[in-house]
Length: 266
Image 1 (tube, helix red, strand yellow):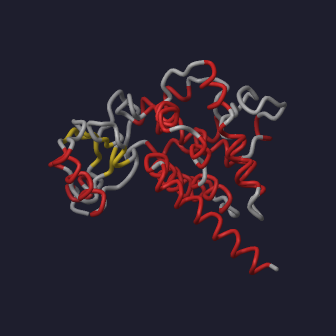
Image 2 (cartoon, rainbow, N blue to C red):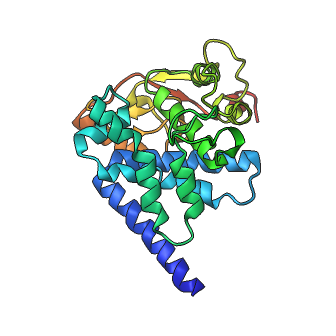
Image 3 (cartoon, rainbow, N blue to C red):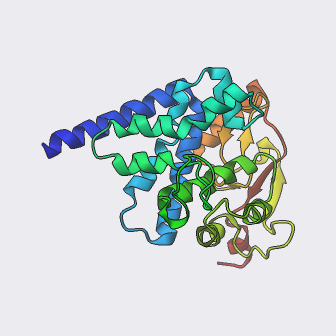
């Protein structure tokens, strides 16, 4: 029965991710970014059994499939919601968890998704007594990354973003936030108001290997490249096409990853 169960698992996950990519490309792009950040985190934290966390990141936005397009857009941007809309959006972790729970062997993934909106002090959804380290570690990790992505839409410095998060007492696991801080501060970052290696560029000045220090979006709000992503041949071509068709929100903040190594003769 194990091969059959594995086949069901892989097939179900593939179906859900394909459906999300076709129905809500922006949520799918965010989920892929979150998956990449989760991989970096489990490596940094040396988590041995990490597949549930990575898969939870991949499926974290699956509940958005249940929303009308307009409400999904508002929820994704965290815009102001009416009371009925807020009630629906607040239940998204439970909806996602319920969808995932129907897939064999994903009980742990389902629990991570259920607690994505839970604060470290126990407040938030779900309304239960679970708090602190009793919240699944995967949920605590993904909560940090999810808020990082949102804050990056209005802040350009990763240092300022994480400083703001550290000031939100009770929201995040403070030990995890400290441990993950190095993943988002540029090398040799000093903690000053500006990131030392951050550069403002226009879309036509982007190069392969640059790292995005802000979300790259089209003029109509489509996410093209998420904060923390490296510019690949495919993403660079996508940005160039979009720049020609609809325009890109500029300037774009990047880190030229290899500048110091070249300058130092490495």
